Length: 128
Image (cartoon, rainbow, N blue to C red; front, side):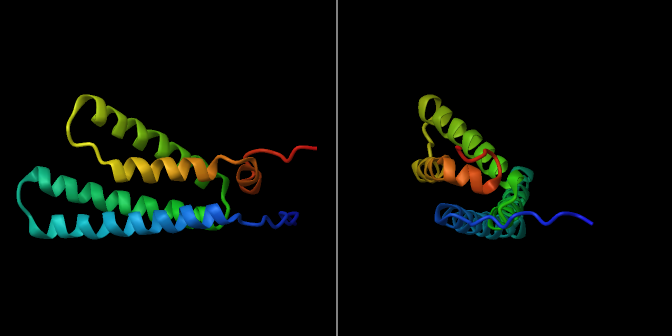
């Protein structure tokens, strides 16, 4: 028999970030499906397939976060760092920066950084 894992309380910021991921995932999924359905060049179809993949990934990560899985915290933080790096590179070297995406990624990283959130995900232990 396996020992029962202690029930961890889900902090409100985790719920907010998970809902944000569901919304972002839905957006990527719908726009990706529309892009693939309209056809066009291979680059547009590839962009659509990438949107579908991002949408599914966001939904899976959000479901993991709502269940307080450790890998979901790691995935969210990785997603945030990669997204912020991408937007900063776009800001400094290109003209098509997405400030909304940058703000949302920053919000997600800041919401998941506090000690109580990390403890609830099992990333860190409580201070004794």
